[in-house]
Image (cartoon, rainbow, N blue to C red; front, side, top):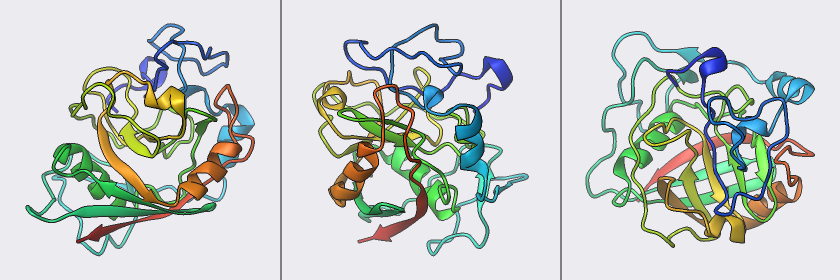
Length: 245
């Protein structure tokens, strides 16, 4: 993200009817009091601190950003100087195995529908960006959201990129899409739809994957959420493996 400090806008997923009020000290900065299940209000104070304990901070890049090797980078990186180049191979089908503390989740990545968004996720995953990151905002019947290395809803990879929006009505249970702070503000935070409130979202979030296996793990994470989005138990992404087929 280019925004810093109090001016930073936090990636948000808004409900279609706007009925879930955010009432925490980390309400949306720069976005008024938008009612939304979003990263920003998921963690505060001791909760955010507990996420960072035991999670080793990754490094940052200097100079040109390059594609990581297919087998993954040797070291974890969580900050980049610019968005990645295109790292996907034409004609290759991509999927991801997101291993969480609740079990593995397999996602079919939609590289033909959203090539830039899939490329971004693959790039970050192969740089071990997501390792140790929590699902910091979880709302039952709506979605589970993660991808912020800070665990506060303010974090990102150091850059933003443009939307690749779906048609209205394309979200379904198991859809994986990018959280954002407005048009063309995608970074690293994503969510998986778990219920009707997510299915009914307007097409404002880049849809780039569908869960094909492991919804039991997603449900287990969802069950530890709350209507306000603050998890009762923090669940963690242990690793993300990119599979080419």
